[in-house]
Image (cartoon, rainbow over all chains, first blue to last red; front, side, top):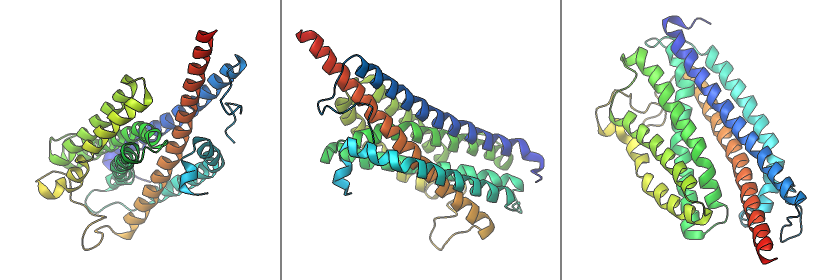
Length: 59
Length: 244
């Protein structure tokens, strides 16, 4: 696949999209793990929801 | 399951946990297909291979406006119906919309340099897109500045609805003013101006990026609900400690 004289512009465009999408996926995944860890820590410290259900139970 | 059931954050969490893996898988498959089709698309007779930038630029530009549209609907949900998930939806869509807008500006700039001879021009389309990006950043700052989520939600909802005025300005800027940016070539009166060899990969990429947005948005909403659960538990714990 020949990209011609402007190959670097094309490659940088796709690379930027890949990097930003990877950052978004990483941010969402990291945030999920962090919130679950905070909820587990609160439950371990004796915090209970009004419903009595586990705070980490999302199923 | 009805729409009112989804107003319950616990039911919403349960639903997202079940559908997120499927959505992520479908998004990955469509993105792969779209990238293969983009790679195999022929060169344009005028632009050469540079036309391949269109397959990432256009979906990001569409989504940058679509996400603000979603946030505007969520803003109505917050102000009119006081839907419990509306402000969660608006808050979590903003960073994703900002990322898509940044990519539309960045890839557009990289496309503009070889085609127009410049990375940037203060014309109506580019400037209105930059304003959209700055509005996303402003909304994110507002959400971070106000600690109480319900107060932040109302202020952000008003700002979002005011900012929605910019959407038709972006869309019609190429018709209302003389700009370097080309006029609409896919969604326009009289049908598309694109050949099938470009249109099909573009539509596949647009659907893939739309699914990517839905997947990321649902996952971010799930995180925000958990964050609010953490906040509630911390407040309950603090009040219990205070009453002892």
